[in-house]
Each structure stands twice: as C-alpha cells, then as structure tokens.
Image (cartoon, rainbow, N blue to C red):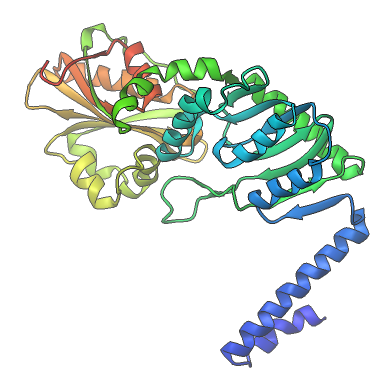
Length: 389
C-alpha cells in the first residue's frame, strides 16, 4: 500500500522534498529486491557487480589463490579486459577469447578500434602464443562471460541504444551489471547450459586471429607509417561487371532516378549513413546537399526489409564531369544486416543502372580501413588506380 501512496504524496510536496522521498523510495526498493532474491534463491547463489571493472576485480580476488587451467571468455574487445586476460595467463592457464569481428562492429569508429587491437596482438601477447587463442565472431555482440575450468564465473550483457537522435547503434556494455553465479544452484545450471551453447555457436561462426589479421594486411601497411587512414581510388570497366545479384529473403531493392531523389526520406537515411560513416557529422541538410544533390546524383538505390519496411542499405551513383565515367558513392548497410550480401547486390545493381545511363566506367574512393568494402570491390573487378591515373 505504501508504494501506491508515493505518487500522490509527491504531488503535494515541494520539489526538494520530492527528490528526497524519491531517493528514499529507490533505496527501499533496491533493499527489498535484494531481500527477495535472497529469500528466493539464497544469498550465495547469485550476486550482481555494478559494472565491468568491478566484475573483473571481483573475479581476480576470487581466483587469486586458486589454480586455473582453462579459461573461455566471450567479450566485445580485448582492451577492456586485458588485465583479466594477463591475470589468467600469468596463472599458467590456457585462454580462449571470443571477440567481436570488425566487420560486425556497431559503427566505424569501433570497427577501427577492433582492427588496431587485431594488428597489435602479436606484440602485446608475445611469449604467450602457445596459451592464448583469439577467435572473432560475426554475430552482433550481446553477451560477455567468463568460464574458468568447469565453472561459469560471470555473465553480462550489452544494451543497444535506439532512441531518436542517437546516431547508429551505440553499445553500452562496459557499465552494464554482470551476474556472478554459483553453478550448483538451479539458476546457475541454466546459465551454464546457455553459456556452453552460446560459446559453441559463436565459435562455429568465427574466424581465428591468423585469418582475420591476414585480411587487414593493407591496413597494417598503410597505417604503420602515419597511423591515419589513407584514401584509395578504385575503378572498373562496367562491361566486366556481372550486374546480376541475389538478396536475402525479405529484402528488396528500389531505384530512384535524379528526378525522384526528393521522395527519399532523409530522416530514414540518416541512421544508416551515420553507422557506416560515423567519422562525419550527419544531419538532414548534409544528406540533401551532398548525398542526394540532384546536380550530381544520377540515381540512388535503397535496400529495404519487407518485414518492417525499414531502410537497411543504400548506394548512390554520381556524375564526374566525364560523360563516360560514373562515381559510386555512399555505400552503406545497416550494421544488423551486414554479412548477408546486401552490399554486393547494391554495387552490382548500381553498375547495371550506370550502364543503362550510358556510362562505361565506374570509379570510387574509400579509406584503407574499410577492408570488407575493399574486398567487395576487388571481387567485382575494381582495381586500385593512382589519383592521376
């Protein structure tokens, strides 16, 4: 009954009094929830760490004087848990870490961060090569966990912020609570089974470090000297491109000519471009003046999910001043739809449309860290050319 009286009392109190009572109510609720959990499953079978750093510290204190042989970890990246990894390695354990694949990162800045971690791992973990294994899973990051020998030590989760005004999908995993369990409890056994299944599924759809790092050789070479991204130019004879494409079930393409660009929703395009090119500042005006400027944009192709009629991919074709050469621009695929061939289909369709408008060659520019896009372009016949070529 006291919970029902709270909102009524707040309406007749001063603002300062309301704040004080609100804080008291929250503290009382948290205390009641903890008591409820203790009564339900016992005070020793489950506990909550308020964030990742506190979780890591709790694990190291717990295992400080224990022998550890094998560790399995699911993480987003390795930088935030480096101390924990070295803690296990220094105890003589064999450690297998599943990390987010750069191609599945939630935005480009995080993707670049993951790439830099990949290319520096051979230096950071020198001397531990025989006991450390890194694999990179392609699924969207959702869970992190640590299993030591046969015991699941902790389990946490990531939250994606999709509120209006938030560009792209932001992952706030580092501050999320982590559940520390006793696997002898009924709840703990369920979590152990879940973790075992998840680890196996992610591992089955992952690449080992050796394969991933080989895909970023271009990035390693170009960033070694300057530490910054380098602009690359590619070109293809359109007659050499097979414009036939396949799309995943439930995805369709729609083409808009230069006279139809006004019908494309700028606000709908905003989050897709923001997630793919988050090194730029995007707003509706920037899209209208640059991406969909009718003075240069000859056509735009949108990929949509038929399930919810949501825009999941985009590319545009622009004039260059040369009547034979078109420019491919702004290839973007929503992070949740990457790896399904949508980007490939968009480029093939753009090449086919460019041919129908009389173009014979297609050019584009991209940054060296966009390794997946570069592999796509090369696979379709694009070749790197010098700026004056």
